[in-house]
Image (cartoon, rainbow, N blue to C red; front, side, top):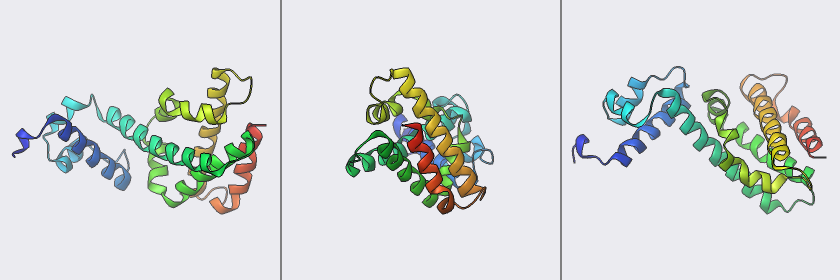
Length: 185
Protein backbone atom coordinates (compact mmCIF):
# COMPACT_ATOMS: atom_id res chain seq x y z
CA UNK A 1 0.00 0.00 0.00
CA UNK A 2 1.47 3.37 -0.97
CA UNK A 3 1.26 6.46 1.25
CA UNK A 4 -1.49 7.84 -1.01
CA UNK A 5 -3.54 4.68 -0.46
CA UNK A 6 -3.50 4.88 3.34
CA UNK A 7 -7.04 5.44 4.66
CA UNK A 8 -7.85 8.88 6.09
CA UNK A 9 -8.31 7.72 9.67
CA UNK A 10 -4.93 5.96 9.60
CA UNK A 11 -3.20 9.11 8.34
CA UNK A 12 -4.81 11.17 11.07
CA UNK A 13 -3.79 8.59 13.68
CA UNK A 14 -0.20 8.60 12.38
CA UNK A 15 -0.09 12.40 12.57
CA UNK A 16 -1.41 12.37 16.15
CA UNK A 17 0.98 9.60 17.19
CA UNK A 18 3.98 11.34 15.64
CA UNK A 19 3.01 14.66 17.19
CA UNK A 20 2.56 13.13 20.63
CA UNK A 21 5.98 11.52 20.50
CA UNK A 22 7.64 14.74 19.30
CA UNK A 23 5.78 16.94 21.80
CA UNK A 24 6.78 14.69 24.68
CA UNK A 25 10.37 14.43 23.46
CA UNK A 26 11.06 18.01 22.33
CA UNK A 27 8.21 20.10 23.64
CA UNK A 28 5.46 21.81 21.71
CA UNK A 29 7.25 25.04 20.90
CA UNK A 30 10.30 23.19 19.55
CA UNK A 31 8.23 20.94 17.25
CA UNK A 32 7.28 22.18 13.81
CA UNK A 33 4.46 21.07 11.55
CA UNK A 34 7.09 19.95 9.06
CA UNK A 35 8.71 17.67 11.63
CA UNK A 36 5.34 16.18 12.53
CA UNK A 37 4.54 15.56 8.86
CA UNK A 38 7.93 13.91 8.24
CA UNK A 39 7.60 11.69 11.33
CA UNK A 40 4.10 10.68 10.20
CA UNK A 41 5.28 10.05 6.62
CA UNK A 42 2.81 12.51 5.14
CA UNK A 43 3.22 15.70 3.15
CA UNK A 44 3.09 18.95 5.09
CA UNK A 45 -0.04 19.90 3.15
CA UNK A 46 -1.68 16.67 4.29
CA UNK A 47 -1.28 17.82 7.88
CA UNK A 48 -3.55 20.78 7.10
CA UNK A 49 -6.24 18.52 5.69
CA UNK A 50 -6.68 17.11 9.21
CA UNK A 51 -5.80 20.05 11.47
CA UNK A 52 -6.35 23.79 11.06
CA UNK A 53 -2.95 24.49 12.60
CA UNK A 54 -0.48 23.10 15.11
CA UNK A 55 -2.47 24.47 18.07
CA UNK A 56 -5.55 22.48 16.99
CA UNK A 57 -3.44 19.32 17.08
CA UNK A 58 -1.89 20.33 20.40
CA UNK A 59 -5.35 20.83 21.92
CA UNK A 60 -6.46 17.42 20.64
CA UNK A 61 -3.40 15.63 22.01
CA UNK A 62 -3.50 17.51 25.33
CA UNK A 63 -7.17 16.60 25.74
CA UNK A 64 -6.36 12.97 24.97
CA UNK A 65 -3.37 12.76 27.36
CA UNK A 66 -5.21 14.77 30.00
CA UNK A 67 -8.26 12.56 29.63
CA UNK A 68 -6.22 9.36 29.98
CA UNK A 69 -4.58 10.72 33.11
CA UNK A 70 -7.87 11.86 34.66
CA UNK A 71 -9.58 8.54 33.87
CA UNK A 72 -6.75 6.62 35.52
CA UNK A 73 -7.01 8.77 38.66
CA UNK A 74 -10.83 8.48 38.75
CA UNK A 75 -10.62 4.70 38.61
CA UNK A 76 -8.05 4.58 41.43
CA UNK A 77 -10.24 6.88 43.51
CA UNK A 78 -13.35 4.77 42.98
CA UNK A 79 -11.49 1.62 44.01
CA UNK A 80 -10.11 3.28 47.16
CA UNK A 81 -13.58 3.43 48.76
CA UNK A 82 -13.05 6.78 50.51
CA UNK A 83 -15.54 7.76 53.19
CA UNK A 84 -16.14 11.40 52.27
CA UNK A 85 -15.57 14.06 49.57
CA UNK A 86 -12.39 15.57 51.10
CA UNK A 87 -10.82 12.09 51.30
CA UNK A 88 -11.94 11.31 47.73
CA UNK A 89 -10.51 14.59 46.42
CA UNK A 90 -7.23 13.97 48.21
CA UNK A 91 -7.04 10.39 46.90
CA UNK A 92 -7.79 11.55 43.37
CA UNK A 93 -5.10 14.22 43.57
CA UNK A 94 -2.61 11.81 45.12
CA UNK A 95 -3.02 9.60 42.04
CA UNK A 96 -2.39 12.60 39.77
CA UNK A 97 0.63 13.74 41.79
CA UNK A 98 2.18 10.27 41.69
CA UNK A 99 1.53 9.94 37.97
CA UNK A 100 3.00 13.36 37.19
CA UNK A 101 6.04 12.70 39.39
CA UNK A 102 6.69 9.49 37.46
CA UNK A 103 5.95 11.06 34.05
CA UNK A 104 7.45 14.57 33.90
CA UNK A 105 7.20 14.80 30.09
CA UNK A 106 3.44 14.25 30.27
CA UNK A 107 3.12 16.81 33.08
CA UNK A 108 5.14 19.33 31.07
CA UNK A 109 3.06 18.63 28.00
CA UNK A 110 -0.29 18.94 29.80
CA UNK A 111 0.75 22.02 31.76
CA UNK A 112 2.40 23.90 28.91
CA UNK A 113 1.30 22.20 25.72
CA UNK A 114 -2.18 23.52 25.28
CA UNK A 115 -4.34 26.22 26.63
CA UNK A 116 -5.76 24.11 29.43
CA UNK A 117 -8.75 23.27 27.27
CA UNK A 118 -8.66 19.61 28.26
CA UNK A 119 -9.49 20.49 31.84
CA UNK A 120 -12.51 22.50 30.84
CA UNK A 121 -14.10 20.05 28.42
CA UNK A 122 -17.41 18.93 29.84
CA UNK A 123 -16.90 15.29 28.84
CA UNK A 124 -13.69 15.11 30.87
CA UNK A 125 -15.11 16.86 33.91
CA UNK A 126 -18.44 15.04 34.01
CA UNK A 127 -17.17 11.84 35.71
CA UNK A 128 -15.27 13.93 38.25
CA UNK A 129 -18.27 16.13 38.97
CA UNK A 130 -20.30 13.04 39.80
CA UNK A 131 -17.55 11.68 42.01
CA UNK A 132 -16.63 14.89 43.84
CA UNK A 133 -19.75 17.09 43.77
CA UNK A 134 -20.79 18.28 47.20
CA UNK A 135 -24.41 17.77 48.32
CA UNK A 136 -26.59 20.71 47.31
CA UNK A 137 -23.93 22.18 45.07
CA UNK A 138 -25.01 23.41 41.63
CA UNK A 139 -23.40 22.00 38.50
CA UNK A 140 -21.65 25.32 37.92
CA UNK A 141 -20.32 25.45 41.49
CA UNK A 142 -19.06 21.89 41.20
CA UNK A 143 -17.33 22.62 37.89
CA UNK A 144 -15.75 25.80 39.26
CA UNK A 145 -14.48 23.99 42.37
CA UNK A 146 -13.08 21.19 40.24
CA UNK A 147 -11.40 23.54 37.78
CA UNK A 148 -9.77 25.52 40.58
CA UNK A 149 -8.54 22.30 42.22
CA UNK A 150 -7.10 20.91 38.97
CA UNK A 151 -5.48 24.20 37.94
CA UNK A 152 -3.93 24.49 41.41
CA UNK A 153 -2.69 20.91 41.38
CA UNK A 154 -1.19 20.98 37.88
CA UNK A 155 0.52 24.30 38.52
CA UNK A 156 1.93 23.13 41.86
CA UNK A 157 3.09 19.81 40.38
CA UNK A 158 4.69 21.58 37.43
CA UNK A 159 6.57 23.98 39.67
CA UNK A 160 7.73 21.19 41.96
CA UNK A 161 8.43 18.33 39.54
CA UNK A 162 9.75 20.37 36.58
CA UNK A 163 11.19 23.48 38.22
CA UNK A 164 12.07 22.05 41.65
CA UNK A 165 10.28 24.95 43.37
CA UNK A 166 9.47 25.50 46.18
CA UNK A 167 10.67 21.97 47.01
CA UNK A 168 10.65 18.40 45.72
CA UNK A 169 7.22 16.88 45.17
CA UNK A 170 7.70 14.42 48.06
CA UNK A 171 8.13 17.39 50.39
CA UNK A 172 5.11 19.39 49.25
CA UNK A 173 2.79 16.46 48.49
CA UNK A 174 1.29 16.35 52.03
CA UNK A 175 0.58 20.10 51.87
CA UNK A 176 -1.01 19.74 48.43
CA UNK A 177 -3.26 16.92 49.63
CA UNK A 178 -4.25 18.86 52.76
CA UNK A 179 -5.08 21.92 50.63
CA UNK A 180 -7.15 19.87 48.17
CA UNK A 181 -9.07 18.21 51.01
CA UNK A 182 -9.77 21.72 52.35
CA UNK A 183 -11.25 22.77 49.02
CA UNK A 184 -13.85 20.03 49.54
CA UNK A 185 -14.74 20.77 53.17
